[in-house]
Image 1 (cartoon, rainbow, N blue to C red):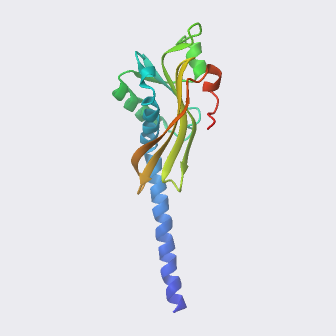
Image 2 (cartoon, rainbow, N blue to C red):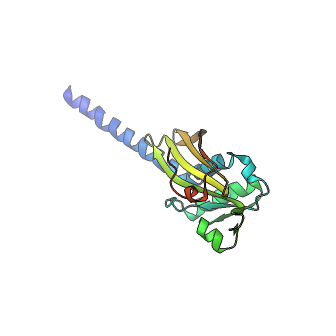
Image 3 (cartoon, rainbow, N blue to C red):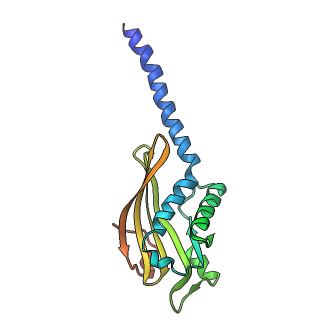
Length: 177
């Protein structure tokens, strides 16, 4: 009888492991969609900052796992939804390109940046903290969570405002909750 219990245990264990690996592979294939939804959640906060924006900038400094195809997918999604060009740059690079007015402390577009992005609960959720910057007195921080079921994106749960009207020096530091 003991041999029989062991013979059922090994295939069951293998099935569970394969299911977990398959779920992780599905999520890795959807990184572009996952990050698109995270950035879109940030864009939806304080929509007044989007007024007359000429571009959207993505600071993907912490998004090391994104492939070039993932980045193209994110840019295409945001461009299609918001009707402006989407570029990848840091705040410093925007300043160097002359897209930031130091006198008024205003960007001609918005800068989206993720300060934290990680999969949690055995890849059942993607938790992120990010910010949208437009001006020295026009920025917002957002905490959010994307939920998954069976390895596919289920829905977005925006956890709400982290801070409001961040100063320029605070904007580009990790957000504290």
